[in-house]
Image 1: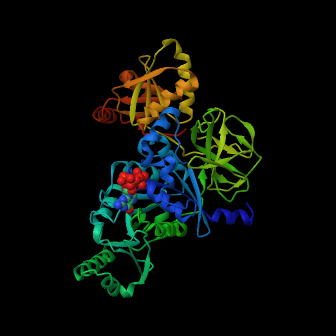
Image 2: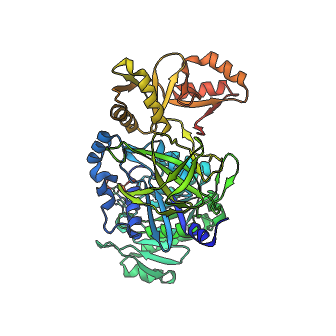
Image 3: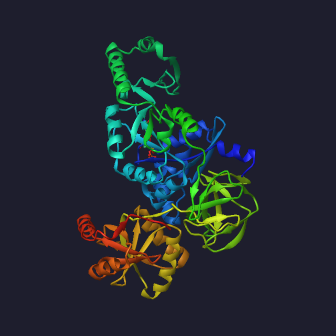
Length: 528
Ligand code: G4P
């Protein structure tokens, strides 16, 4: 076990990611958190660096020209003596399998919902993935300064569509032009929203509710309505219970306006109070706990071409146990090779920072010379492999073809490497010579075509293909698989790692096949 200092370092860390549908306010929340964490001094910094919509067109060009994602990867900041690692989940155009896999490297998630829109499609999928690991979820209902859905209706949607019981911690006083602030139901305080340009927060004791509201020229109808609402919610919702939160049965809910930096401190306060410090991870042999003395960690993301001149690749490792120190000797368990890590680093909006030491929950980037795969484990000698860093079934498909058919071998090599990095998934149908690419985000195809050209000197194109779903097929009995293959050969492919996959042309087809072959598992997720 580790020494006292190590334990203190673990206890003071929180590692989390933000889940949201595009435009719900993830970038704005991130920016306000970085402001509160004093990483940046002025608003606009995050977006201006190419992480958002202000520079979307530039960003698209750079992304295409360089075939990379230049978005921020990990942001570390201090908030009230707690060290927070915020992992960026690519959204908008750079949405990809990375977005899903990052959720396996965090201990908590913040769900941001647009108060006018409620639960949107992408949120459902992201929450489904975060719940594979029972990751605790804090919810922030954003944009209360605009006209919003009824708050109880939003909470109903969360309960129904995400199967999470809501526990409101704050409660809004109206919305849109009438937005006055929130009640903090646990602190028994009222935080008043200031509409002036520089928003500030005033605290008032709960007991003075009427006076505060009257002072702010709020009419008596609103007071009545809010009082009724408070009575109602005290009957509908239970009290917060940390155990259920940690099991992801309940989610504490906060309301605010990220744009006005209103309510972000409430989320951060709950994060440091309730979110777990770095937790154990499962390996193929045993549970590995953060307090253990020796370093262990796993790769959950590989980023290519961070340095354009060298086409370098960075493998991002989540530290599970022990401590990283500059010069540490680590075993790359899959290749059984020992390597000395002398230059681990992290990035904020494209800037690279050298890391001298790091602890469980932290993310370190190391150079990858084409040998590291997603899901690889690093230890100080022990032969263990972390599990739970899966591949997710692609959601869009294209057929790739070569301008020069003689490049077939080169193409296979290039695609092999790119799929090991998690940049794309590749499928080889059993009954023809097509090569099918599978992705989660559409931009991944352009990035792959670009990288094939620049890094492998291959000219390739892609076109639409009649495939809607991929499911990895397994069964307890080999015979079942044989029968299935004989009957459905035209829809079967091998993925890049030789796993049998069913490629379905439609939801109806998949449903029929699944109901016909009940002894076959059609897996949406595959362990590396
Ligand atoms: P995302 O990363 O989840 O995609 O969302 P982002 O933060 O970029 O926010 C999407 C839009 O919503 C932006 O407006 C942003 O300013 C706005 N927004 C975020 N939080 C709030 C809020 O609390 N209140 C209001 N009223 N708006 C909010 P945009 O017009 O699309 O872009 P921009 O020009 O403002 O950046």
